[in-house]
Picture 1 (tube, rainbow, N blue to C red):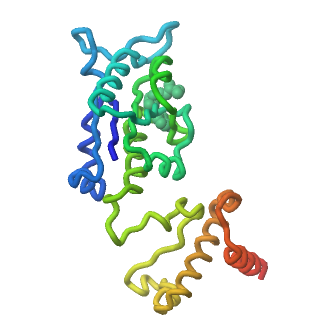
Picture 2: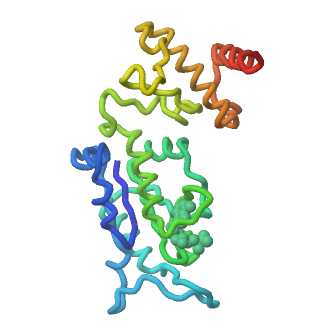
Picture 3: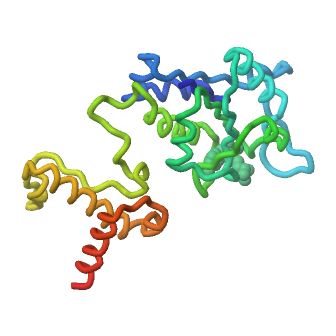
Length: 244
Ligand code: SAM
């Protein structure tokens, strides 16, 4: 999959070359390209921002250099890309959106800076996306977060023994607790069932703990998670445990 970042700080791409994402970049499983609107600035100062009409504090990204950057990427790619503007006013990013993006051949992320961007830039993209109800200094970290969440769902990014399918939010639930060695740490023991070698019991325990954790921390997720009859039995067991 190809990721494109429109940013005043194209060096963000090298900061992403770490861990499994870095390996995926090196192997060609994913491609991350950054282009700076400054390349398309027309004055001698290479300006990409200007003061807002109507006054007020801060600077606003101008539409021209962003439009030129997007045109250059379209020409270079030769095919379409889903274009996303990063803004705290956009659709909230979540695992479902990551799954939809992972099915695309190309995703273009446009990063704002300063006070934001000229309103006409909104018309250049397919979607506006927010990471959450907080304000960052710029779109780069939001874009990097989206790239990590999307890239790890695609082929050739996670190792063979790592799976994205059972994790928190992939199943609609939070993930069950995980343990590794030692078996006893500062008096806290690993649950015996995980050392039993009985795969069916381990699977049942994990599902029940995923349901318990979701019920305790994010009960809202239980309203939409796809639950089986067995899940409902496990939830009834949990309710009975709560009452006893
Ligand atoms: N004045 C803008 C507003 O009130 O909507 C905020 C501008 S913010 C300081 C600069 C840039 O950071 C934004 O244009 C956007 O690209 C990025 N940004 C900030 N918070 C974000 C968030 N929660 N999600 C995605 N991008 C964000």
